[in-house]
Length: 204
Image: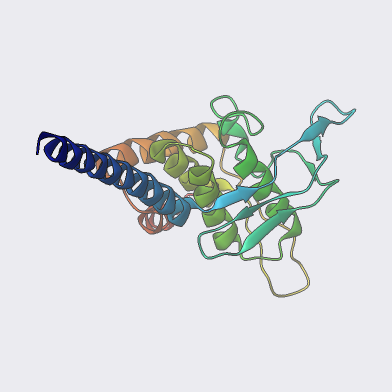
């Protein structure tokens, strides 16, 4: 009888441990799923080499960002990038080729060069890709607001598809970015709300 009790207790403990392990695994899977849904994922590793001009980089191996809808934003081997899609006044705080947002910045730069997708979608992709790269919400939203306000814009129709850059002085851009960051910290807005606020500011 004693042996049967011990065996039953042992079986119960095994079941409890198994249940705890399954619960922990479920929570990890749920967190990973939510992270993927929120920001997508990257395929491949970003490897670059510096060009002789001392500023630009060349992508050595192809990689891609896959957004939450499954769309793949490809960066081909040999792509050259200069970080110009991130407003220059931001470089002192967020250099385009350093930090967790590095991969997102390169993908964003590429699609600001090709201009075969609407600029609004490209800037939104930048935000989602930053989250996928592990950038915190405040930084990602502030940088999204900055590129939406002052980053390049272009038309998908007509003969002139050259990007239009903001002519607002850097000091004014800096002030707008600081105001946006404060508002973002206080209200935790959605990307759509950030875009609407920027449009209402009419800063370009």
